[in-house]
Amino acid sequence: GVAGTAIGSANRLGQVTFNGGGNTTANSIFTTAGGINFADTGTITLTGPTYHTNGNNFLVTGPVSLTNANTTITGGGVQFNSTIDGASNLVFNGSGNLVLFGSLGSVTPLASFSASNHATTIIGSGSPVILATSNGSVTFANPVSLAQNLTVNAGSGLIAFNTTLNASSPGAPSALVLNSSSTTTFTGAIGGTQPITSLETNSAGTSSFLSVTTTGAQTYRDSAVALNGNTVTLTIRPQ
Image (cartoon, helix red, strand yellow):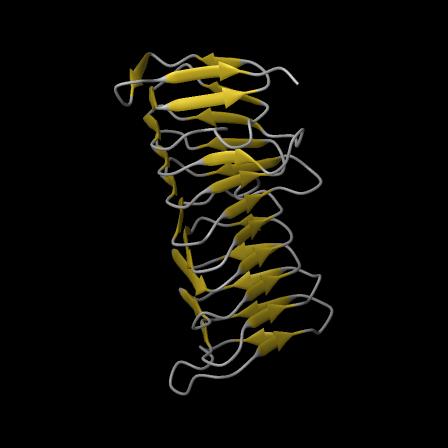
């Protein structure tokens, strides 16, 4: 299906569902009484800058291609079941959980990535996840739960986890690898509630952290590591 112009920008709609079975291209969409559901399993091309559900859910089944320089998705619960690619500044701003099952920017890097106001960002399902930008920042302003291994490649962009990060469950694959030649900052505890598998930072840039708990190795290769707080705790708890 093709939606070449913005949908609901003047008169906002109820539920919007795309279910043609093939590829879908959609410009900006605004709803007020229902969510947005891209049920197609083909490629979903989002060409608009804004997708707003007024607090309702936003669900995408197939792989996503972003073509606008800026893409902002605002809703309640937001879930992407496959990959996201495209040189776009991708912003998630919702009230429910943000669920990302596939890699982001692994084929065509994102310009930048930001997630804020969601209850929790849940990352991963059956395969390890890569989140890559073309030297743009990666920012999580809400708690993160890893259900799979995550590698963040930000080039010269900063990486910031502004609250907690934990494994989704005991024994869940949750190895965290962070690559940035800029700053990598952990404001909240990592693995404090549920230890992650391991943590590794790259040889360039600097890292700042408060508390890290893993079941495996912690490897800090940065040129400098800052202690973020009066007491810094590094803990390894073998399973």
